Length: 580
Image 1 (cartoon, rainbow, N blue to C red):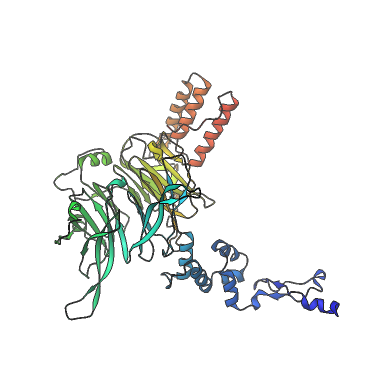
Image 2: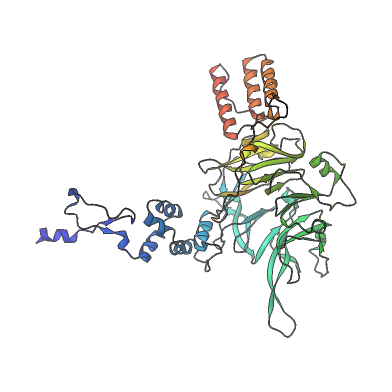
């Protein structure tokens, strides 16, 4: 009886079959194992429930195995279950074509990473992750803390604090605790200078419900600007606008006593008002005047899509891709354009157009230099180049946008005080961080002496990093992947590719785009003038840094030169010369 009951006690084998391939054929070796059961016979709700317990990466990988699992893993029901497992407090679906999948990916990939420049520990750390956050959209570090805005309009206040380590020691940790600062936020800004010491107040553009006329119970949604102390998160000031005006971005410019708030409307117009920051902490009420900025008065036919600012200049990107500038001080104007010919101290709000070959998608604005990225993924730099912060391989200032030929299609761009950073993506979808300019204080990890061209920094970049920011003490990287934000770069037409010979009117005219042949002859003469082999090796490393090569190619040549130098009897492998 026991022998006959054995087949009945065996577990039935579940077989995976694909609708496009049909059921799997059985063989002689499968006789006696029981009838297989297809996964397709399971209720769809049960399959979705089982798959929802997998990590997001495994769900994506499972969806690539066959057509059946692709349909199951791509269904909104599956992603709704995953999203509720990752964020139990998220009660409403987000916006977009695929709201649940977008919400699940946003919450799976969110993270704020930082690497301190000082101290003995040089590794990437991760901040505390607010459970209420619906992805990360923007972040801003201040003197003591970090502020993060999510896709639901909630602004989080990440605090630095003293905590107890595993060894029982009390240590200071960055961004280890969080609280909700406010809800309904659209954008926020602080002092535009690179030094976080000056960021005393945080200006938040938000939407609030205001009561209607007296005797009525109706309310209207009105935009307002709320000012918070960055040290404690206490609100010290609030200004409310008429319900007919709707804004989407806020920026600051000017000194503390004459701080100008720039507000970008949904229609692409710029309004501004002036406040005195030194009087914000005094409890009083006063009226400020909101006026249309001159760029919108002089160019009424153009719509502003984005604006960037620092202490003494503003950059506007139009919806058609044009770029206009406001410069308020003669020193910054000279650094940016190399001359004071068109500077008018009596009319500092007059917008100046930049001459560019294509539509600009995004930008980065430093104190005296800037970076632009066009629709073809090309990077253009302009301004002061005393420390090599333009990445052109030399230290000559540029009074007009100059292309950095060996970098293309960046993810993010950052211009600091005397250095620049570029977040790029390799062919295998891995991320790397490149930097140039001044390396003092460890702001270019791995290159303490700086570099006049973009070099690969010794930083481990998260897979889903999308933006970055550098302060005097720390390097920050924000990780968040939005499936609805696809790469918008276009392919450069064949006739405009760098190195393509341009048609010449004179027959047989020499073709040397950019003077590359002449530069190579000069490099060879410099190498020939070196007296010893070691000097020639060092000079070659320096020249490799000057040449318009990709970061991976430069690393290859530097490593190869180190190997040759060691084989020739050198003192061992040496680090690449960061002066290049």
